[in-house]
Picture 1 (tube, rainbow, N blue to C red):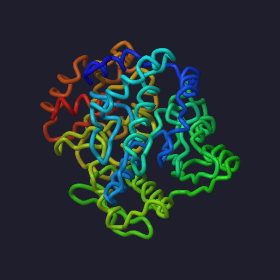
Picture 2: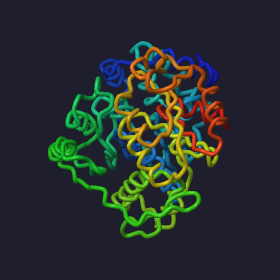
Picture 3: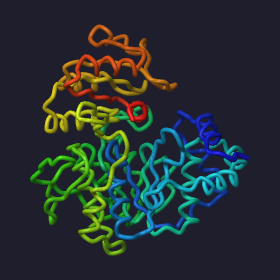
Picture 4: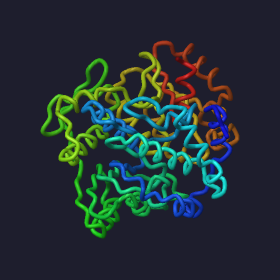
Length: 406
């Protein structure tokens, strides 16, 4: 029995797995019957944007006075971060009670941490009898641990090349995997995707007799002091509380999703506007002050979105502090960052999957490496007091540096 959240965090770290299989999980589910999970839900997949889109939706539904659950990943310090109930972290005692109820079964079936966390989250959502739950996949779709429910709406935000060892080596293969969240007769909303990515999604939609909706274009983008204004028909002057251009795409998907579910979950225009202005997740285009920007972009598409935002939002010279996990394609990422950076310093951080100096050996001739990420930041801040210090490359690194700077 585990009786405090610190011990539980350590337990989950111990049971993390790099494998991507559902064989043990499916055996477990045949005993513990996921069909009993009958809460209303929206299920989101996508390479990027699914977390922010999920949070936009959660905020809007909460402002409309629904009891809303949100399940997203990963967590940084505390597993309770993965579940929000009406915009607050889930109760620690409730989480521990459900974990302890099933711990022996989890171990009997050798479940991974994410499988355990997902099952616990679903049990909590069922027990609390929430009106609606917003669920973000962990990775992919077909065999993701979250993919055991039938939602009222499936959303695929974006498709690009990431996790190719698990999801496929082409956009069409990755899209096919993400399309695994599509269910029979359940409507599907899709973000702006390439034709290559859309083909397998169209095929899956046809097989499932689902109705497809595509996100529309946004227009007339303007910046104000703390965020962005834009139009998305039929609405004018929509505000979001971030200066990240890429978040307009995610807010647009959320707006379109609210239109689709309006018959069952009506959100007024004013409630939607209030929800879209609520704070977003940590580490997403977050200014610590006018000279420090943190963004957890960690793949090529996310870095492209970051670069596009910087080109519109920033006029200062940029000095980038970069660190990433071992599985990230820095061959594509570093040249993109170089296009907007006056200098790039590469570093590492305390995590077993973080790149160390030897993992950057191909780039040490082009970029300075600093072992201590905190000291590297301090040196950049001292050397370039009037410029912008960009901290990016990994969500975990972004969270770590944000804690250090707060």
